[in-house]
Picture 1: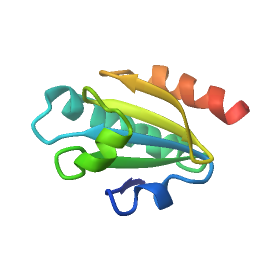
Picture 2 (picture 1 turned 60 degrees about the vertical axis):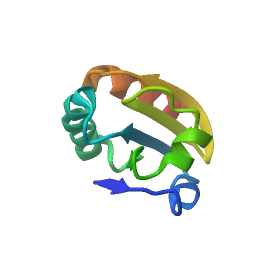
Picture 3 (picture 1 turned 135 degrees about the vertical axis):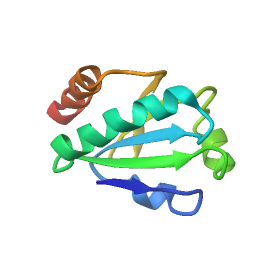
Length: 105
């Protein structure tokens, strides 16, 4: 399951465990390509990782705070701390490998 997060809920939503936050916008073609990949990962890894989406057009303050310069950008947090930032489209296998590394730490 992927949770929608906003400026108001972002800090509270992403404080515990390993989190993947997908920063996206409706008009972004690569974002629309990345969405099904993130959805598949959420189905297979959802018991280990929390998945969130943040629309940068509607939540500009959080995007600015997280220094999002391009979309899609996937931010990985572990226990509330940003540990990785990945920009552009990435395959399910690539993302799973990155997430597995943070789960092992």
